[in-house]
Length: 315
Image (cartoon, rainbow, N blue to C red; front, top):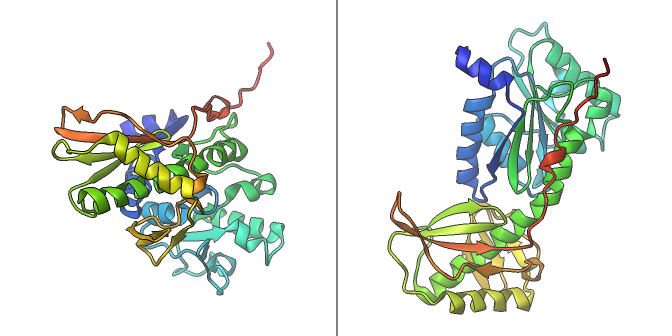
């Protein structure tokens, strides 16, 4: 391993990335995280996040080709391969996935623990979804903890933390902003298409900002931002249902909207809180794009200051 990478990994407390809302953007971030922070000797990977946060997409980006034993959208009826793992089988898999929340419906906790420990002890990688549900009896922390809420948190725990409950508390507190921002973003894009003839997928580029979204335009749009904001607010006030249609579309009231992250939404438009648009287009001098910035929710403390627990050492 490159000595510079060893230094970076060993001194990592935690890294924080915006959690993109589209499937392909999330794949790209996951690939970057894998390249930067995962090593071949990281055998226990803990994944933490709520339903609809994008855990399955994140895992697919981190470990391309890994067969997921279960996910929120469907149930794999076959027993997880980790239970049949034998260290004597030369052709046994090297990387296993297990969804603890799903497995707890069928197996006792100690059985899940034994399967994970056996694989790790024989230097097999285990990706444990809902790691916080098994940590209490596992007897060890993960080599790498990854939580997904509004942000993706990557941590390499020491005896001082971070601990799964720290990561879980943050992602549970922030996921609502990601869901609200994504729904507001898609409604805004739908109105841009319908009323202002900006088409997606197409020239619009999407990016992220805390508690909000950014839509980039290659030229300065001829759009009244106040008018656009009022049109979005009208749909939010109508409290229409938001539902998934297939793999790349959602239904918002009577509007069908293209979306590559159709599960990462609030259930109704009325759940979007305090939507507003910044009242001017911001020019990015590096790309010469004009940015339309939308925000949701209120300023809130996420809890990152509590992510590490320090131990007082007496002389």
